[in-house]
Image (cartoon, rainbow, N blue to C red; front, side, top):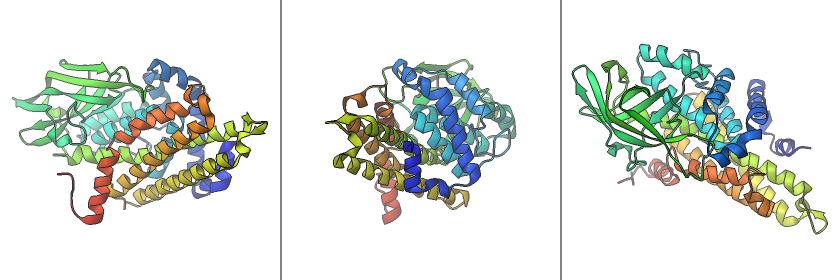
Length: 390
């Protein structure tokens, strides 16, 4: 029995999925096995990947903006989107980030808050993978506190002029369009910015030790002039970007469990084949205790993700519940990755196996779309009714 089959036999998780959901998981897993896994170690080591080629693949599979309706998007359930994120992150967190930033951030912002012209211009191309988007909210000095952003847009006749900078922007160096949030005289507003606009610059972030198979950029805007039609007309204030972040966090709730599952399956296979003192490593009590505890936490995390998916599909999910899922599943995923590394010993630190790559990536997943501390405070406020942010 394969490690994947053994885990499923123990947990019975597949029995909670519809036939359509199981088929989707199998399709994404096969794509990852055939197209991504043979190259992941090299992409991670090189700090590069063929993002445009992969985006075209993902568009062909219907995974980009798959949970949105119309404009070439699939209109799938939230749970189906989460399952796709889980399978993508079982390959690599950076590749799930490509899907998440494209669909849950950039496309969702246009779909929810854009004009009909903006939707018609960008969403079909983005759904097909013919155009890549990024999401400019975080700044060098403002991560957890986006309200303090310094990027500013001012009116100049019928136009807008942007000045400022954004940091840690996934897809930034390969994007065709950026959703940029900026202070204006009338609250924070979002702008649809073609990246070939004069005054737009994207510089790749180098020397990362995490999410290396992902394009990360610093964006700068210098007297960047946009027509009045570039503004997202249907939202003002932080409600816009924060609602998009909640969509991305939801994908992470599932995705983190994909990384954890891949680590555990790797450790199970290794423990079965590695001989220590003339006996399989998996035959020792301490190894079995580690494996049992990790299988337990993985199962709980996947069940929590599915529960939140069903709530979201029923229209009843809250941002606090998404925070609950992200906090728990990111915490447990990185614990599982680190424990699996101990089972592989020295082999666990090489890129011959995926565990150290997942562990490094999960350091970023713990931080982006809200740090663990931010989600603790969100949950604490839900429990006590008192905000501890300030």
